[in-house]
Length: 275
Image (cartoon, rainbow, N blue to C red; front, top):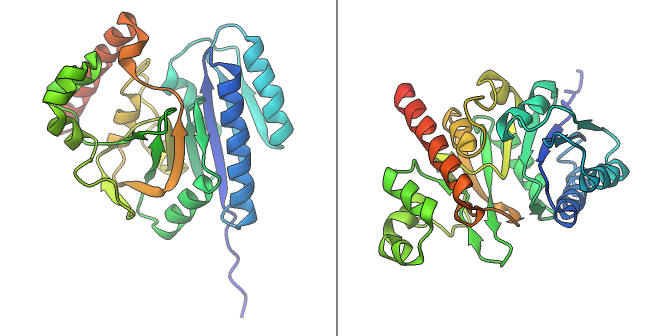
């Protein structure tokens, strides 16, 4: 009787960079390396491919430094460069389309991974083959909880998120808490969710390919919601932990808020068409 041969567990990672501070990006790369090593050590992962994607028309020194650092950590790595700023989702698609791995991690360049993050995520996806995507438990750069699991946003929620007024946030706290699953969080158990924020999305690569990756309709914002909306089964996994060192649309100026609202209208229209 022949012993069953276990299929190797493979992972690809795409990290899109645009004018990211070197120290922040170095933290992401170093913590990713540690988490990958731990997953391999615990036999959750056999090998990985890292795609570092420069979305700047030029090649800043900070990106070149980061690429050199990554090359010292990852034997299987590809730098994707020279295409200019084509948007976050379309840039990730460059790596998704190349990937031959079983799983794919969409990773922001401002994320610090817990040592066990990769191991926990891959173990869960391996145990539950009907789950398409897992979202992590996260804190922000001040150590406070950041809620990456989301319900479908209402226009009121989008307005509140766009202006980020402390007074209005307090008045509508119940609605905002509902939007970010705070009626169910914190929890030690995985929960099924409607949408996932895009700073850390661990997915089945074939599912990403089947749905066509990120929609090219979006330049920035809501491409993550659109992607996760088109997946069937999404899970918040509290044992998969990260620290998100960026975010917060309202701090980024009027032009970003305009882009945020424009992308929401595209998302809203696409959601109605799908329903």
